[in-house]
Length: 189
Image (cartoon, rainbow, N blue to C red):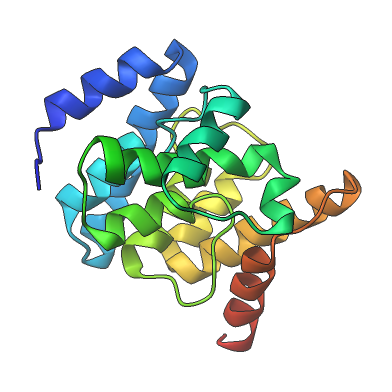
């Protein structure tokens, strides 16, 4: 697999707005930090971090074309949630266009928005790095960062506990993967 980071950073910069590119760079940096702390492959963490939002600013119709061309059939919740498309289209783009074939990297991109039960260490790192990247300034971000220092699972539980009620308030469907991840985390405490 090509680990030419300069190429991937330039690609992300060319496909994303300045704000989104800065976020991706910060997620990559947070992922590297977490990978070192928790014993994960640092290069995989950096690569997944810089590419996690690679299709985030691609229009929804184009994202659906990428998803369909990649052979992915969306479930009903994903179909009704355009804000989830980029994780799926990003995974397909990285696999089919960039030739990335590492399943762990691809899954960490695919599940960085919803999480899921049975996540790998890398998947947990990208999910939490997305919440704690340096430019994040939402209420309680410092609590989230502190939880990630205790364990990735504590960070994930706090993050999902933050996101799920927000989805409920907005009267949107909650993806079953998010509920499965939350339940697994609670039951394994």
